[in-house]
Image (cartoon, rainbow, N blue to C red; front, side, top):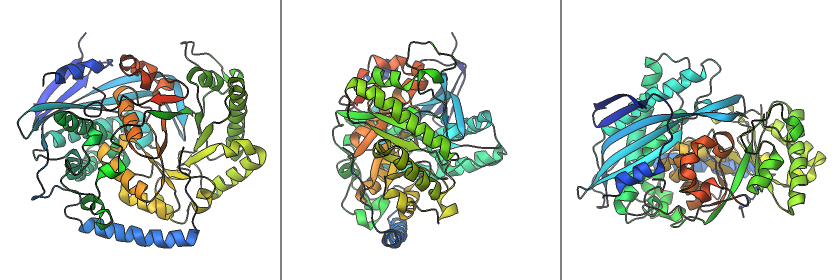
Length: 527
């Protein structure tokens, strides 16, 4: 059955458009390569935090701007292992969800995967190949009230082609982090150009650009690790990186390398957060028509099936009565099920996906929840992105009071170090790290967040297959990460099928945990 509709070469880049979905064989790329307990954030006085954080943010931005070529590759750096990109290829896979996933103002019933192959050459002339994969996630990264799903997805595909051309045409050798820092301005410029050329009603946002570029960045990191025959997470020290973190983050990081903020070996197990979408049935009476595919369909069924102890609850953010009833109903069903199982401790996270009008809504919600369901309130581990992602548009909407109750985590707002520092200034006490924002940039964000003792968690973008392995590897190698999200098993399990036998610890959840002990293979470890 024909897969390739078109294939053309331009400046070291091969474009592959797929005619239909195909299940990626995790051994395919491997064969090609064979030749060759959660820290709680301590609340601080609001005014003191605002003043010091604002001063630090200004100092940080100024020192980062003065750092030598903070987003470029400087000449004269000490010699380290370098790779040079020879060719970039990409393709797509499309999958339908077994059941729709509702979050915030969006309901999603399908996913497009962007898969990237990178061929690189070492300084010794050896050819290595890297692979990266990510869900395009346009409903989340490029939400629009005026443009259709097809329009925003089409824009991302046009941008992916441009990013492939830019990446494939880059000929300077270097470390993956430096290559990404050098290319990111061109990626952002390309997003602006695509927006103009397609006459989009709204321009492609930076978050969307990061998501589109992330599998290209992952493929380069994967190739670099394979070039050295070791996990990518062992390539972030002074023996591999030509610059310390002051080069990227300013003088406060002088003498430090990413390896200070990355574990050399993965945590052997990671707690799994199971997502309950806003339209998901909780109990049997909520089901109108069963899917009937053999997988669980109610929350108690999922708890028993995977031994769940952490549940992420998607909320409306604009209907406090509904939000309260949703959390209380989930807590009731979970408590009954856990009592049957003999489980005494479990946690919730609350995700409003930006829908709260202001922090007052969140504070009132938490107050009422504590009154009506004290035990459920105590089980909340953190709250995720309660209000709109554009922090600069509403600087008065600060989170200090809410963060005294529970960690408040930045997610959609987090697109760079500046946004992280602004969020901290505005009272956010945690950060949601995502592989879909790019391995290079996420590691830098993680370093800054860890230095400031922020609460950390790793979320996914309903990532299946290689993208989940990448996300799980990221979570398992960053100290202090509370838990990891893995939603594809709920909504698009078909995309996981080719990977289940090779990575049973990741795709077959037991006791509410992922077995991440094996995520120390060369590169990012997927292929």
